[in-house]
Image (cartoon, rainbow, N blue to C red):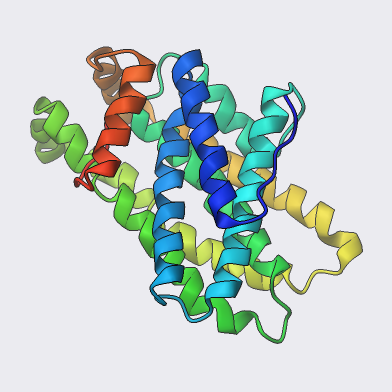
Length: 263
């Protein structure tokens, strides 16, 4: 499979559509994050068109560089090449039975926000002007946060017994809090500010070190402790439908702009 990269935001959406459709045919969980990310990209495009961002041209440039890091990792994995470690780990989980939809989404978000977003932000900035990006940086994260915010409600809606577990233990809530969007966003912004000052000849080593740290977070998402893992396995046993059907359900949820995504 050839390496495809986007030249503008419309091409990003088209390439994500290709990944989603291929995932349906292949019955691959890789399509789950792609749906969420497509919706983020559509919202960013709408924001650029209606003037929501301080600098629309800069935001499109950021969006394309940001997306191309995900696309590169995806096509590397498809070609059996080695992507960044955190993306490789996330993609490997997509081939396993036990992770639930929520974990697939969090693994994708972890790699893309905690590694890719900081790098992309630094690449369109200089040490002198990166602070000008912060408001728009926060907006792109807010879009992603709003789309993911309904995941827990959706789990409860699809599997009502989870309501009792949440009230009785509160431990699932702790899992979501530990991987809060605010923490991811703040970490990504801090990394962007550090990375923009790194000399060109040291950047690869800096990325590898960051990649290792983010992969450790991915391992926690994949294995969040005995109790939470046991609950997730129980949820997984009651998930209905094929992977393709989950992808379709999630597409419908996103298109209808409902408060939850499929689980």
